[in-house]
Length: 431
Image (cartoon, rainbow, N blue to C red):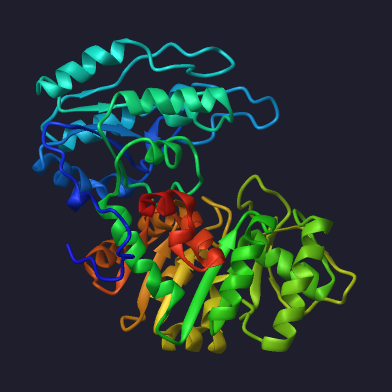
């Protein structure tokens, strides 16, 4: 694989000597919802790294997080079957001719899994002897030490370090500095997996884009996107917003009330409104879908409303999608049609009922065959695959299309100005 575009300080899995050594691999297989795999792309994207390790004679132990089992208010961790790694293991066993062992460690009903127990020692012996092909640890966020601080975290890191000889980070989508993405890399010889390398190489197309550059960003929260939006605004020629982020921007700009938009977020959005009054980079999508209910698309309870036809005193119900005819607007079509780089981290409507805006967006973006098209985020890829399966499959083979496995990681790298400042990446370059 070409190493062009990578920081030369980054330690690569291709450089590691791992014959007959146990290799702890942090992957991002966070694809399970309610016990079902919604889109296996993140699993499939890890094949290259798994093959490289197998070719080098390494004995793999995989680990990933799934969902958010920890209650932020109480700190309790719920080890629910709906967030188990077992569906991932079954998928891997169908694709690979190997037996995969999953340690069954009884959790504390409130604190989650406190420790790796001694049963894993027998499994590691079988792994080294080739009796099993792989070990897959339980959901890392089931372990108390994964996101804890102090002794609990240190103990978990010690336990992880005791079961392996090397560590490989292949989880671009897991950019937070947790025990399994950061601390363990400081305890074992550590390397970047091939998927992580590919993600870093393609990020330069966002951070140093071919112009004109258009970004389409949507999300359910505004406050968490302020930093990335401000950084992105400086680089783009045009910015298109969707979801609650767009509702918040419109609420601040036109002085209207939209259900679901808090006063705090409206005030935060005023900075972007004032910036855009000077720069004029945000392309308004002129037609939106207003709904009286969040319960679905119920006849007679939704309608098309036009941006700008507000009187300053208006209050809208839930704005749940962009009307498809917004993407027939001349300014929008010209911007996306003439772009040389397009970043799409966006589901425009409340799924599954309000999907027309996302469908129209994806169809318009993929019709630009000359641009670099960079799709980011699990939700974006899932809906692209569901709504435009032909476009999704074509993108897999298109050298000018790339699917990032982590939209949040892309935005974090944009905010910091470099992916090498993300702590799980930075630690792979430390001496």
